[in-house]
Length: 83
Image 1 (cartoon, helix red, strand yellow):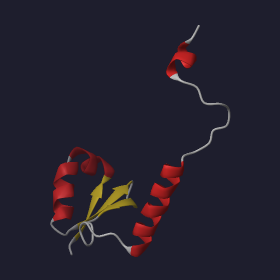
Image 2 (image 1 turned 120 degrees about the vertical axis):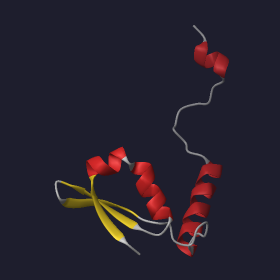
Image 3 (image 1 turned 30 degrees about the vertical axis):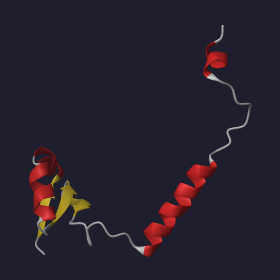
Image 4 (image 1 turned 90 degrees about the horizontal axis):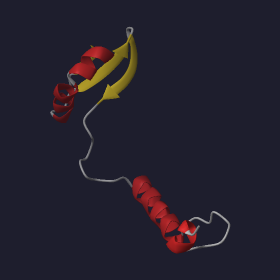
C-alpha cells in the first residue's frame, strides 16, 4: 500500500482524486502546516461489518424502536398549531 502525504489545501482542491487513489489501495495522510491531521484510506472488507459493529447496530435499532421519552404529554398537529 502506497502512502502519500498531502497538504490540507491540496486535499481540499483535489479530494475526488485522493478518494479514487484510496479506493485503489493507497493511503493518503492529510497534513496541516506539516503535521499529520487525518488519513484517507481504503475501507477494509467492503460491505462486511465486524461483530462489534453488528452488535452496536442492533442496540441502536432496538433503542429507536423503543423510542425516546421527552416528557410532557403527546398531542396532535391540530393541537400544536391551535391559536
